[in-house]
Image (cartoon, rainbow, N blue to C red):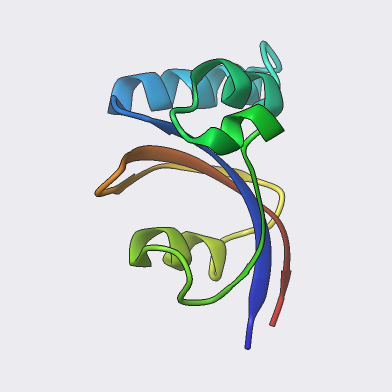
Length: 94
């Protein structure tokens, strides 16, 4: 079974998500700092780190990105029932 490690930032608003992505990509802030300041998930305290998990353990929209998109790139906004996420896959093993 495929496994991956990822981190994320969860916010309620799509525009906030886009703004944070732009700030991270420009170097204005780091993923970890943005997660600590803005994420509504408890993982924000750990820089958004979700640890390692298997395919099918997260919501489908999340899984699709984590198990098919590039590693080491900030993806998003990804909309789920929880809100809008920025995702970064930190490692993946198929």
